[in-house]
Length: 371
Length: 262
Image (cartoon, rainbow over all chains, first blue to last red):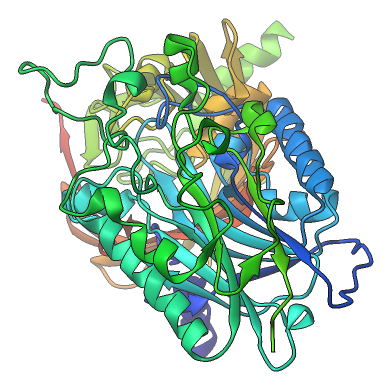
């Protein structure tokens, strides 16, 4: 009888994993290593950091959620091809640290390819930590099905103390939608090999809300600033970035018409919603200047003066090009540090336009002046 | 050969046994009796040698039908064959849609598909328990292009619909039912489904139910179902039924009714 009860308890534990995974405010990130590591040793010089929202490897596929398309599930061959191209790009950039957003590790839409492991095995990066922002056995909407997508930090050097920090959930959704919706996060890790003297070096990666119409984005940026401030005030160094889904101070804030799909209607009295979610950046007081504290406190890879130049735009929905011939029209992706970047080496890689709806930004960390 | 077939049919009729509440076994439902449950099909004893069943709730979106016929007793086992047919296309196209409850991506149009299944059933009383062994072949006939990406990767569903993507599969299982008291009995089953060559090629299902037979016309059962198997994303297991938002398992509660047609 005891054996039967024990077997039933095992069934209960193993067979009752949550349908949708929720997270505590702070939890461990999931660690990865390349199956075959490339040799990497740090000799105290500069190192390169990249941030890139890779759109889960679907390149410019007309996905229903963020363009005017109606596709949901990409075929395996196309995913392989896109991921190979992303790996090649990262190898060409020869980055030491890569901050990735929208990475799938086990999702129906991308053939269940573990993209973190794929990139480790096909680039010169050796270690990674991953934090889910959307993990569910099944999303019963639009044919999404099983999903595990999130943010990752990839590095040539070993990562330790990797932490997933939960960002506030949207408050402008009903309970059922919120239950099945994204749980955005920022992920932080220490890279001991890149320590500068007594100072530890941390990498921090964030993907802030895109579609919230309440003040969720402000809460996300506040948590981000708090995390960075903790590292800074403890005397350590960080390199950070991600897809902040926020435009730089001084940018245009309304992209509703250029992002509008052919069957949509905005900015008219008859429109169901006046602004398009994700295309309007004045949802609450202060949103246009939401990044000012970051620019004021830390060194930006692309300065606020240059941030609104066309050569530094990092985003344009696929449909903007198809409908309005616009490849990119805003900057949403950023790199910052509490030390300094090497002047003139920061780049927005607009040649990677075909590989995602976001463009990678790279910068070279300068070790000068560190005591 | 023709004689053998005719003999087999007649022998089946001669040796057929009927019993109440034995849908899983080789025993047929008695003539003119019907049984149905909330989650169980409507079953009807057309004659001593023919039992029909359908799932009435989903019949109009997923036409289905099965028939059970007695066979020659084999090695002391009462034997029967069950043939099933299901046409899932209308239902699958209904859930291939945008927005909430779109379980399949709307980019996929499901072609006409016919599922055919034949199961050999053998039942015997051993030490006061009714034992049923079963095994059979499943065929998925698809009239058009079926995109592999349209699969529903869920427990219970993935391997059942897998026959349409894989064209065929086999299944086998064992059911044990034992009366504990005059009114209480226990039913346990184990089923294996194999889809050779398919991405996610097996599933094992196990069910344990405690049954309270109030009368020969009504019973209540409760218990659990456990499913484990290989899926496109790897191995997985689940205890069912599972309530997503509450994140907890809840027991199966099934009511079943029966009556004789006058």
